[in-house]
Image 1 (tube, each protein chain N blue to C red):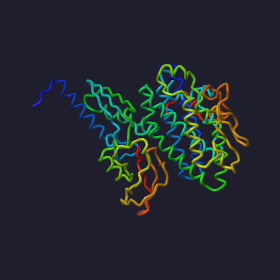
Image 2: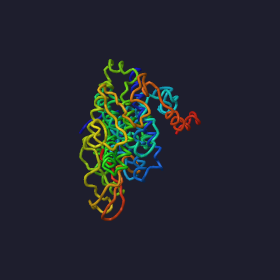
Image 3: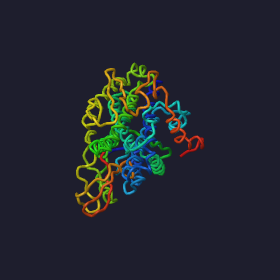
Image 4: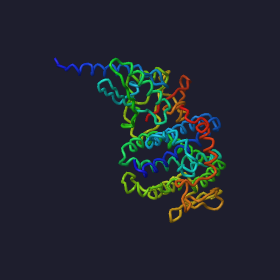
Length: 277
Length: 172
């Protein structure tokens, strides 16, 4: 296993683990019982996917639990969008939709990898992820066609989530090595372009502000600039630009939101060192 | 008549006994069906007194996988002639719902869980069935309440005829 393989798989696993943890926070609190069950299930899927990714790079002295829970917060390589708090139902849905479609684009490319174990896992994961896409698409359609308040809230949340979604395609650490080794089929900037194309047309179809900006009553708008960067328009809730120049989550540069999540997520592991579950 | 060498006879017997033992290993979350009914056993290899069983997990995040591995190891280690057992998991090929046997589908229905259709499912077609049949009354006048249910492999449904909630095993 090369260092580049370890680096890329760690980032894939960290995205799934951290967002899976955020989804799990809805357990017992979701707006209604079916969604409580849905987010618990999606969380279980994502954390299961993370566990399977970690198992590809686990070895003596760093088992799956140690990889998932035994690292300091700044060792995680998830994109920042995954660590943001759920905030409200609108942001949860916007992020769920953006993330699962980004993951779909990424995993479709990864399905062509020459690394057999990774290819087999990704093929399996993609079949399960179909249900996440169906769920996210159903909800986006429902709120986008809903009453004014629903539309306004999803547009605002979408602006906030979309501004950070580009971080999912920040190049991995050692990505150049991975490409040269030949097993990483598509470079992140190429996937980012595919993602922007998808998002532009999908938002347009939903009638939500995006590339066309035709939703006049939306409280905020966002556009894809010619450079490919996502720029949050005025009134956006975005806290940070999509990809900060010196690197974001893929370089271990996180926000306090991850540190807060990390404390909750790793408490059991840290307090019961060596315990088996 | 086929002639066999002395070494081959016990080998074939051990292998047959392992498959019989696996028939008795239930799915921990759906005890009405065995791991064989679910099509979760890809292969059994016997080398002397060493048995290797390859399990295909139904869902990646299924917490029952570890329990299934333990149960399979325990059942196989009880087979006469086996001294060492390895239980491996694999995603090659991915487990798909068409691997559930006809007997397995029937057992799922009797358990109150609507089985998935039997044909292969292409990835682009994965989703809830267009028509779900109530496992209690056989009516197709049913509607889905949610894509998700109590375990990763089940969706929540309601029967408009007998008014029972029921679960549909997800096609995957």
